[in-house]
Structure formats: structure tokens, C-alpha cells
Length: 305
Picture 1: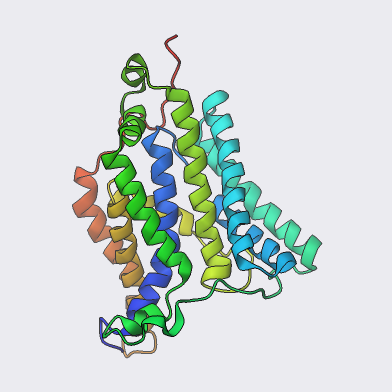
Picture 2: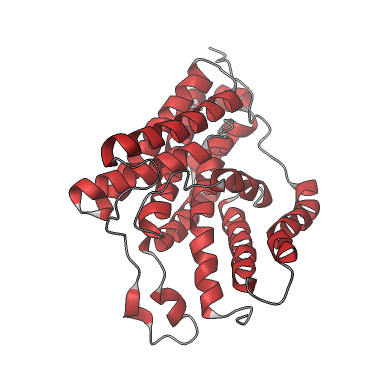
């Protein structure tokens, strides 16, 4: 087994963590305005498919990225209308998105590419390459880092600054804590709710693009493989903060990278496979007690005027 902090493990950690923290921050923006979104899984899967589809026809992976963001935006608008305007149950709306994405991507995969399991290979976003190879220790890590990982770090920093240090960001948070009080102070609550859901889901679509054209160069059936649900857990571990979600994702990524690197080692496979789950339970025990969701999350709001 490699060293616990070898370049290989760090590269694998970043690769696993990137879609998790981008999707978790997207889910965070949803919940900060009081809307639960368990449809992260379906939105990631849809974003991954559309990213490959757009790249296949344009031969430009950056257009694929934009297409995945647009897909997340559209599904976010759908979730917002159903859960805010129609006042439907947030969880049911999210589950419906997951079911729709799972079946529709397989249908389109067969209809467009004639294969139910996998798309043709396309160009990927690529990595930083040898630009920073001369930097000690972290050079090899940056060598294999996707551009989307860098963008993800930028998003985490930007969302943290937005929520903590801007007037609009503070209003944004107040909508998820006490929408009635926010409206009494002149905050357009419904507008903020729609904005939070749509922008958040656009980020989740971007996380899907990382799966198909950032980490790989192909779309496979159900390739999100539960990452949307893990992103929800990351959101709780991170205590509904962008930086917390980033750190929680890196923890998950490191544990999973460690598990992968231990395969073939003289340790029973059952022990190795249980490592991520045991680590998750331990973290859950120590973090969930003091975790506090936005007070109005999951509750419908009626305008006072």
C-alpha cells in the first residue's frame, strides 16, 4: 500500500471529492432558502449525460459543461415550480426527478447511441498537466487535477463569501431561517427561493459534468452511483456551510481513496469494504448532534401580503 499521503492517494481523493462538494454546495443553496432537494442524484445523472451528448456533437467539452449547467438549471426550475408554486412535498418532487433521470437517460442512450449501457467516448476537460510539475510535493497532485476541480474550489470560496459577507447573502440565509420575518423587512422571499433552487441545481448539473467528461470521457448507465445521496450526507456533515461541505467531501474522498489503495493488501476484503461506512458512522456520531439545519427548511411559505 502507498503511503497514507502519497501523491496517488491525494489525486484519487480530489477525484472522488470534487463531484461531492460541488453537488453538496448546490444542495446547500437549495436548503438555505428552505427547499429540500433529494433529487441531487437525478440532476447529477442528467448533467453527466447531457455533457457527453453536447461534447459528442460539438467536439468541445466546455460546451458540454455549459450544457450540463443548463440542464441542472432547467431541472431546478422544475423542482422550484413544483415545490414552491404548487406547494407539493419537496421530497416527492426530488424522488420524481431521480426516477425520471434514471429511466430517461437509459432511453436516450439507446435511442441516440444505440447502446443501453454506455455512450461513445468523447473529449474530456483535461488536467493541468505539467504546468506546476516543478512545485515540490504538490506538483504531481496538480499534474492530474481537472480544471473542474479548480472551478469547484473557486465556487466553494465564492459561495462562502456570498453567504457570509454580502447583504444579499445574509438576506438569502434569512429566507431559510424565518421567511415571515424576512418578508416583513422587505425581502422578496419567493424570488430568493426560486433563485436559490435554480442556481443550486445548476451547480449540481456541473457536478454531473465532472463525472462524465472531467473524471472520465464517457457516460455509463447510472454512473452517478449514489453520489447525489452522499452529497446530501456531506451537506449535513459540513453543517450547511460551503467550506464545511468541502472539508467533509475531502474526508469522504480520502477514506474511499484509502479503501481503493488497500485492495490487494493482506487484509480481509470485508474489512476494507467496511472502512468508508465505519468512518461515516463515526463522523455522524460526533457531528450530527450539533448540526443545525435552516429552521424553515422543508416548510411551505405563504406570502403575508
